[in-house]
Length: 219
Image 1: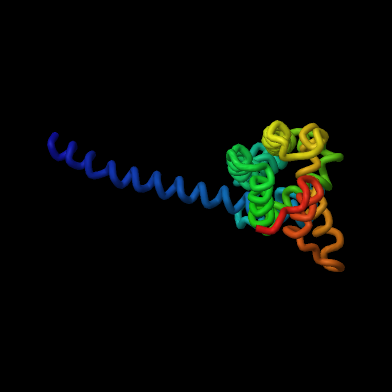
Image 2: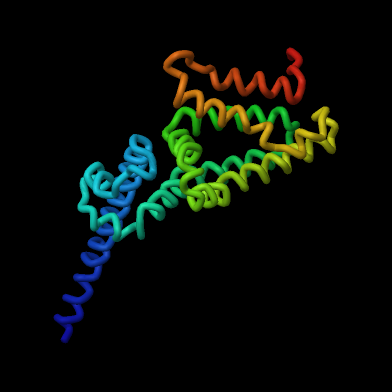
């Protein structure tokens, strides 16, 4: 009896270690599928992308994808959640900082240039711009998960700025899309025209701030 108990206790750490290894392998496989999906969606678009090709890029069987994602739409939605949503939480926190709106906007620009325009995240946004009209459910999902949160955060920032007299026009507080518009312009430009005329995105967005808030005075 004692021998059986000792043997049972000795097996538990091995089982726990096996579970950890399997969990790690599952997480790695899931990340590989998401990375392959981003490559495939970016190269072919959502409509033309096939799960067979995603599986081939990820080095897994097509059936393995269905262990993690219900279908192609669910795969895309999880791609947005994993790639974009964590950054949106940081954006919301930055917009709530109690500083002049111009200072906060400059920090947001730095975040956009570094964390969106300088990464594959811009490919996800460009994909939504291109495919959203054909797949309204994807557009609705992206609006709910990303756009509505960005607009709410920017609107709150601009309303504080208007109350403090930091912005000259009430229209800017009414239409927060005006503040974020250059980011969309930059992503569209990059996909279409950047090879002909590269765009200094940070300089573009700061020039836009000068138009909205007035030119920053030296010192």
